[in-house]
Every structure is written in structure tokens, then in C-alpha cells.
Picture 1 (tube, rainbow, N blue to C red):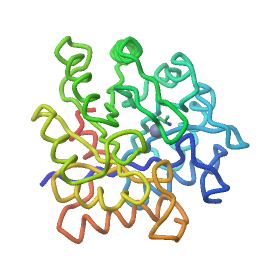
Picture 2: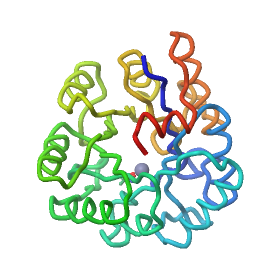
Picture 3: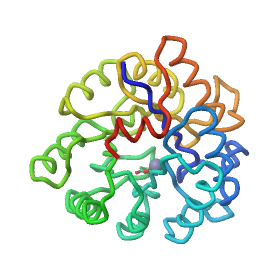
Length: 271
Ligand code: KMH
Ligand code: ZN
């Protein structure tokens, strides 16, 4: 089986220090969390940035400074900025890190309820606009799908040349309002994408390690991190993203699947 790519989603836009004091906000904290994740086996950092008080932002200068701080501590790691931002942000605000020309960035491929009260809006027009900008900037999209229909939207764009081979998906499973985290749904999703695609699996909250184990066993890749889950085990807060990555790497090694370095991840993803 191909080596396992572990992505660390180190802070996201929603989770706060009130929920877990180890969530990074400042540039320094973000860089240190990225390094701990990298040292534990992450080859990709999925990056959101915050103001020092924790407010999510898509400010390009904040991304530039955070990327540079991460690169100082771990020069080879792959950095994947978010174009999802937070649910209330405008589309142009969300797109800003693409202009820094990262190797890869997230591309959210549909709209869904996001928790009890929020809606994460991605109209087809917005998705097409983001996909075009990513082609122009030579940025590989990681296609974020929160539900099966979002795969179908991505495949429509692929058939029109707006998404290029080889597609790379992130199946986000267990968001309240979108697809549930289950083995059957993972099988459904992973059999709905072209055979030359790659995919990573993100289990939300208590599903983080269960979905990680399923992805490891079935040949997918895995995303873990504070953006999606703050616990190392039931009722115990994780001390760092490194701890979450280490647990994932150990799961994989236990069943004989090795962990990809960033160099190997670049090859697997055609970056
Ligand atoms: N924060 C969520 C509303 C992404 O990074 O592309 C969207 C999100 C997806 O996190
Ligand atoms: Zn994100």
C-alpha cells in the first residue's frame, strides 16, 4: 500500500482556547504547532490563521507571515492554506491566500449546514471562480467534500477542464448538517471518484481516530488536528496537534503502513 500522508489541520477557524487552551492563535503559536505536527509525521499543514485574540482572518499578510514562520521551523513541510475561512466571510476574502501561490489549497465544493446555526455557502459560481483562480496561480486544489453531492459537482468541473488530473479529495465526515462518519459512507465516497484520484479522510470530533483507522486500512490518507477534534481520547484534551498526529502515525505503523515524508507526499499528490 502507498505510504500514508498525514495532514495536520492545526487550528481551523472555529475552535477556541476556551475549549482547549492549546489551540494556537499567534503566528509563533501556529508555527510551533506546525513543527510539533511535522515532527510527529505530518507532511501537510492545513492552514487557517487567526488574529492574536483568536479571531479568524484570511488576511494575506497574516498568511504570508505564518507561512514564513512555519517554513523557518520546518522548511520541507507542505503548507495548504484554507480558502474556506469562516462561514461568514466573503468569497474574495476567502480566496486571498491563493495569491501567495502555495503548492496546494483547499477548494470547498458545495453548500451545507454547518453545526446548528451556520451555513457554509459555496455556490457553483463561487466554486468555478475559485477553481479558475487556482489554475491561473498554478495551485493544486484539495477538493473538500462534506457530502456526496459535492463529489458530483467536482466531477462536473473536472469534465469541463476546470479541475485537472489527478484529483485529490478530502472527505470531511461527521459535520452536523453533512455526511455522517461511517464505513458505508466512506466506501460510497471513495468508490465515487476517478480511479486515478487520491483522497484523505477527516473524521470530525469523536470520529477522528475511527475514520483515520478506516482510511489507513483502505488505502486513503488521513487528516487530524485541532480544527476537527480537540481530544486525544474520550474526555481528555489533546496537548498538541503533535499528539494527535503521533497517535495516527502509530495506528498506521501498527498495521504495517509507513508514513510519507513531505517529499514522498509531493510525489503521491503530483505537486
Ligand atoms: N471553517 C469552515 C467553515 C476549508 O478549510 O476549506 C470551512 C473549512 C474548509 O474549514
Ligand atoms: Zn479548514
